Image (tube, rainbow, N blue to C red):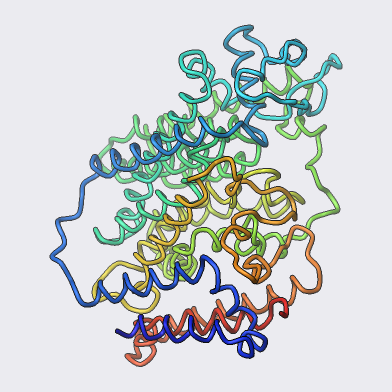
Length: 529
């Protein structure tokens, strides 16, 4: 009855004008969030009173089929009810041109308005640096359009989204396998799968972006490299090493920002492999890197991936890495945690993964590539990603955070934040379904620092979005609110750490009171009634 009492008491307080005047955050519970809180409390109460015997944990194929059916089914629903947005039409237009005309000269495609096959438009060109002969050239990498060209020819935008959905299902399996490699037990590996199967990967499984293919190529390359390292002691591993190199080479073709992660995989291979596996990796990687350099040399006259931006990194002089990092995690439109709260476990599990990295090659590889994924994003002024779903540039980082979450949740009994694992996973899934249920409301799409539609849809008399910082163009109130969020997270993580050795601290995570108390503390820093 504890969850029901907590929820009932807080919901009752939200109906008292004087209390709401003192704690405006309570007013948010007079809308749809109040229903969510009541449903959550009821589910927790039923779960404590009725503990059914759980079946055996599913194997990889059932998990793949479950995720694939979910992604493909939801993707087909979504794409038939919403036009393309953001960078999607440009990737599709490039795929059209490659299949039909075997080039990336999109001037004639824009003249014919080929984009009318999937949107009424209009679509303005996204040109990068001009070719060396002066003609305009697309600002996006050719890797995804090249992969999708035959797919688009066979089934248009819908089939492209279905294929990306299958890639997302495969990505979740890679996260599960990497979690086992990093020492997670079966339950922890299942949580890693669930973290990767939910938001933000679920958002990008419904759109034509490079994020899911990039994350899959990175995770699969790491897993093959680790397999090759393990097999090298027995003189085997050449095929795994060659596969790891091939996938690593693909990364910068998908997006220039993934070049750093590809380079880190190459360094890991040089230091960890030996003999024929290392030779196989080097041969494939050297060929791929040469072709990549020749591509840029032929198109731009400069053998650097930065040729796409005229030879220099974009946004120089506008970089604010600490603000970008905070925004990637907490921004109300583009942050990870507001939409995927399960990754609280991933952040809390990073210190354990760092400690394991002293002796474990899997943890070392995950952390090194994770830093390589994060660094270019923090150095870019548009860390939020433009008009897109939340947490765009953190999607390739999701396997690392999923593995960290799986490690935190391994072992029995669950303590601290691990007690919340399935509740947080369910909340993220429920939010995903709510955002995708009516595509025409555009709840999944954000743009700059404009009002976030999903929080407006969940608001009652009080705007829920006002209690989350907007850091794209942060003002003083947003900085104050960010400080409150960071302080609350620091307290939560400290209490989680104490729960490992203190039954009293662990008991706090059994109650609905802790998250409600933290929410009210954060709300005190939000807008006044």
